[in-house]
Image (tube, rainbow over all chains, first blue to last red):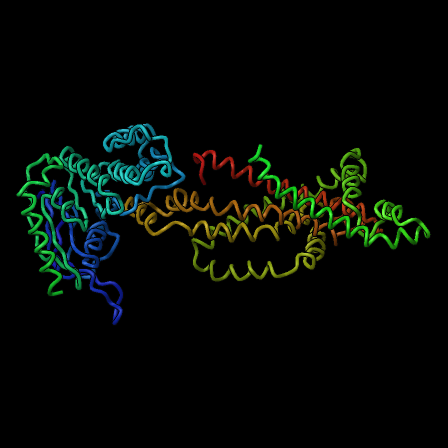
Amino acid sequence: MAPVAVVANGLSLTFGSGAEATQALEGVDLTILRGEFVSLIGPSGCGKTTLLRAIADLERPTGGTLLVNGMTPELARRQRAYGYVFQAPALYPWRNVERNVMLPLEIMGVPRAERRELSQRNLQLVGLAEVARRFPWQLSGGMQQRVSIARALSFSPSLLLMDEPFGALDEITRDGLNLHLHELWRSTGMTIVFVTHSIPEAVYLSTRIVVMSPQPGRIVEVIDCDLESPRPLEIRETAAFAAIGSQVRRALHSGTSHG
Amino acid sequence: MGEALRRTLPVIVVVFGLLVVWYGAAIVADLPAAQAAAPGTAPAALVGAALALERPLVPAPHQVAAALVGGIFQPITSPHSLVYHAAVTASSAIVGFAIAFVLGIALAIGIVNVRIFDRSIMPWIIASQTVPALAVAPMVVVVLGNAGLTGLLPKALIAAWLSFFPIVTSMVAGLRSPERLQLDLLRTYCAGSWDVFARLRWPASMAFLFPGMKIAATLAVVGAIVAELPTGAQAGLGARLLGASYYGQTLQLWAALAMASLLAVAAVAAADLARAVLVQARGGRL
């Protein structure tokens, strides 16, 4: 089997119809290999979230082809091929942390003992094993988002889709979570598709950065990001980091100037 | 001490104010009767007499309290026992509430899940509440009586009639309360509609159910009392109210009213207790 996680060919997606129609994606070609960390970056309305939602089968493309793990997004979703982390933690307030992480496992019919073990292991992975019995409202925003990551990881999907997961958090919390996420990606070898509008975040985390532009949403440039790994946070002060950052910035500007 | 005083002081002031107004009203209303009973009495003694009439137009608070306490501490087998009458009313209120609870939740689930239900049933539910229960009660009793159903059930059905509406409306709002994000999350797990209901819609609805349940609990008491009025019931607070008003026994009437409000308070307290149990199980929040 070819080590391909996601393939999009001439993908387009239009919301509404007639005069009200919005072209959210147009002619998107993208191949994401297994084990890659790909960031989608661009200004609001560039279709980065729409592309992620299409991969997750939360939106239906109106043209082109899209394959996830070699099958249609719907089939991939039915096979529970991916975990999805939303912008907000979306934890259920009536469940404690452990039971929130167990939610997908319950739905997938995992036996109770195994649920507990998987929940424990994944909370450890995000460094929250000690708050398993607490309730979401007793945790900070950053901790809540880590719980939602543990929840997405709990059933060991091969693909992790993340939609601006750290967008609502403060800079320091965000740095910590970036470091954590990079380590997680390195140690698990999973494929991650990550939507962001922060250039440093994209450069720090990614192996490739997909720069998008709006009206209609399309890919402007795909930039390789071959920084060493593991990546300490200090890597952000190196010349190589700055060079990739300015390359992304230039691509973003070229994308919006003729938009 | 200071904190406790600051909290209770407004309550004390309001209660005191109400008592003053009440006593004032009792004196004004009952003075003519006292004067007619004993013409030529000195004004000061007249006020005392007005507040001690056997059948006052407006009984004074202490008279109502005495009648209430007297009614409560009757032997439970006595027809004057307010505890007995309250128990009769409470039993039809409880059965009525139980019917309303089950029916209301079932209807809400239907309305949320079946589009046709929403369009076809909701208008009837609203219309049902515009029909005065007092007008419907005798019909229900007669129809059910012809079908061989007498006793508690007709009264319980009238209590349920009033009580199911807040349960339906709060449950519909609660079952529809989950946000897009929470529904999308379940979609990513490929959750079936049963999982969406049992793991998201149902638990999310609880925060909406309890305020509705509180209203429903008091309406069940009101419904049970209303059901006793036109049905010629021999027992129950409604029967007691009707009898007392027929014979001009105002003290009895007010005591029964006070007992009815105590019953409603108990109903609300029961709903609050149920809520507290769930809050406890959910770690301190609903």
